[in-house]
Image (cartoon, rainbow, N blue to C red; front, side, top):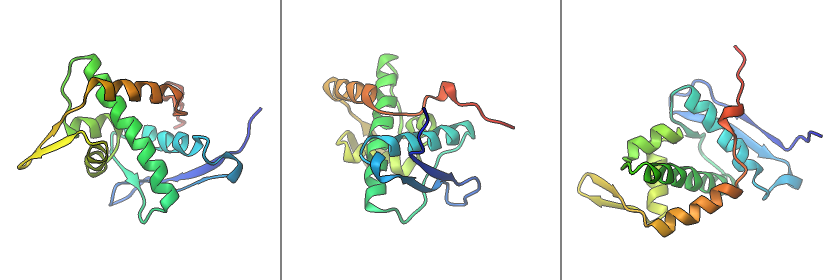
Length: 153
């Protein structure tokens, strides 16, 4: 049985690389991970377009909290996947595989405390315990399954 939980409007053509113009989750469903699900859907669509993007600005306090939560999970998942393949990722690599704009990847890595900067060079340093923590969080998150996306032409 289906329920309307909220909606988002996708930004198709944006000179500022906005991938989402508006997001709303109905009050009974707030705080249950559905905003993160809608955000993840917008990023999966962005990745299908082979672009990167972010939310239209300005963004509300509640919106930025939802985005920070999604960005944390998405960036850490990219790092977990890379560590499983013994592959070192750059900020550009993370941006490409997540669809998240480079500036938001940098902000997320800084917020997570895993980014060091030496001159113009950024170094990502993540402890295995940090990766393990996010593996568990990722399993519990409501996110869009890209394998189930079907787009009409």
